[in-house]
Length: 113
Length: 114
Image 1 (cartoon, one colour):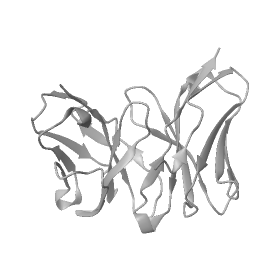
Image 2 (cartoon, rainbow over the protein chains, first blue to last red):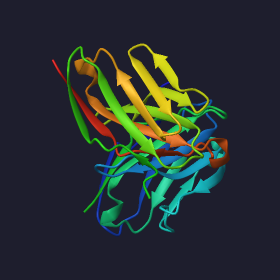
Image 3 (cartoon, one colour):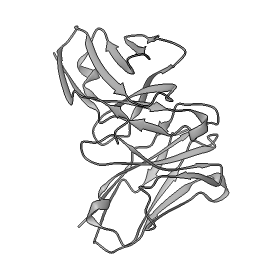
């Protein structure tokens, strides 16, 4: 078990472009979370999946954001028509059902120029 | 609306002394609390947790105290070591009804001086 993996670690994109991030959770964890962290702030909840079902989405997740978790395994987070305000660290975390503690990945740092 | 607050952005402590990091919350529905530690360029790492049915939880050098009436929790590190230098986040959840969504504070940057 190598923990939660996120790819890429860094992404620089031009404003208006689409980007997609991938998260591979710990294999036996059926819950998967996406958080966003900006400078000087704590992580903010974006969305979570239980298996393949997306059960909750934050109002932070505008219609330019979409997340999927096909087959309840890895997850992708896509941002369309990126804006400079999307620049942040995007963190993925997973946990087994009934366990409060998350395991976070190392994050994907997005810079929109 | 910041439901979890860490009012001290930074803290410096001498090696060997006690570090006390504080956290306040506003939502009385929160029933589970975590502390995470974060090094630069890494994701947060789980440190210690406490349920609302307890007022203290201890794990080695780390102890978390919960005062439900004051909606306050604190993390004590004793003795502090240089390797403890990191940003510490507290987080709170209202439990399974909210999908274990955690609300995080803004973090306290701890520096342990050798």
